[in-house]
Amino acid sequence: MSQTTEAPRPAATTHRAKTKPVLSEGKRAERRLGLLLCAPAAIVMLAVTGWPIIYSVWLSLQRYDLRFPAKQEFVGLDNYATVLSNGYWWTAFGTTALITVISVVIELFLGMALALIMHRTLVGRGLVRTVSLIPYGIVTVVAAFSWKFAWTPSTGYLATLVGPNTAVLTEKASALSAIVLAEVWKTTPFMALLLMAGLALVPDDLLKAASMDGAGAWQRFTKVMLPVMKPAILVALLFRTLDAFRIFDNIFILTGGSQGTGSVSMQTYDNLIRGLNLGIGSTMSVLIFIAVAIIAFVFIKVFGTAAPGSDTGRR
Image (cartoon, rainbow, N blue to C red; front, side):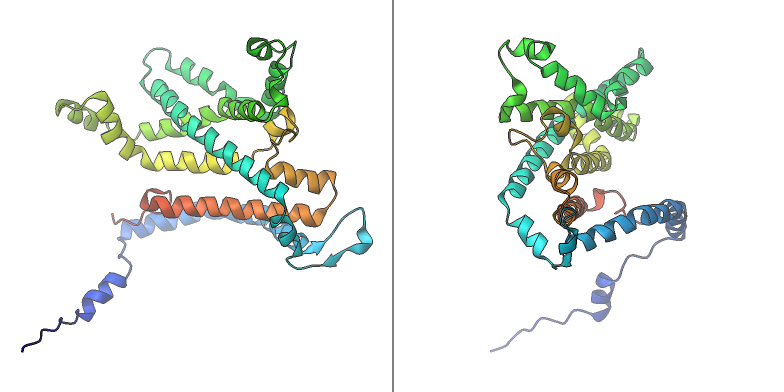
């Protein structure tokens, strides 16, 4: 009885599969230029942010309460165990995640619609873009106070529309809705601005060719425009997700974290500034930093080569 054996794979083929692609001279020169241009900003950012991050990590390993300075001591990871086993932290984490997901999804759809309007407007294009970007130009605290006055019973116009005896900011569900509405109103223009930059990358000739092939408006949008815009969409989603997860201003002004609307940033503020507990507050700051880093890592890994800075193709 004959027996067949699989021929061993040539060593050269395996070696080629594991080696990195060889970059062209133009690609290497482009990367060197990019590193040189980014180096000054990177050095300044490291100098400005490096020490606060290191000091926060050091404080998070200490029992450091300014009300009892004589009791300061090194406690290792005890502060992390205290925070991660606390229900208030996870409640705030869930509230933050809920606000982040809902606001970013709404902003993506509204921002895309606004970007298409600004991109296709032929008459008064400058006026349309200026008016659309006004909310993003207003300071967040000022905008939050305007929303608070609008929702104030008996004096606010939005409170009057909802009902004369309705206090929106005193109920959890309605207060969270008001916070999400304020976030969406404020940052949708930023999302639209990034998406409009992606729309500029779509070649008109490609759209005309698709139209001549019989593609309708929806097919041109989903089959031609969205694939070309994918890097811009991912940049917009990444920036807004990271920003939304650190939400503080709107919650601080509208509800002060009451009615179960507190975010992780509000919890950190309460412990660090109001409670003067530098150890616990710094621990929460480090945990927020880790969460933000994980979100960025997931975006880069999940979306692969479409993510910014991950292009390894040859030129």
